[in-house]
Image 1: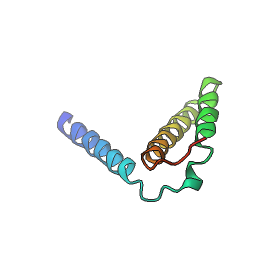
Image 2 (image 1 turned 30 degrees about the horizontal axis):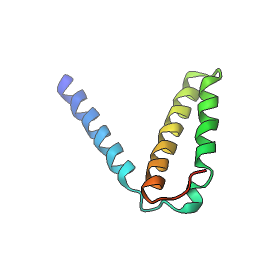
Image 3 (image 1 turned 45 degrees about the vertical axis):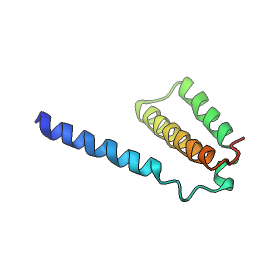
Length: 79
């Protein structure tokens, strides 16, 4: 049981790293206003929310931060 769980978690982690590393579709248009969108999601996280809403917000924040990293690696403005 533990081996199976460990293998599944390792696979998921590897998949997230591969997805995050794919910044080929990053454009200046996607990067514009990114800081504001991250701030808005963080504000929503500080407010009250249901469990499912909280999980959705955390996922969105993670995606936005990954996009910001990709934008910065290409020197695109995120403000």
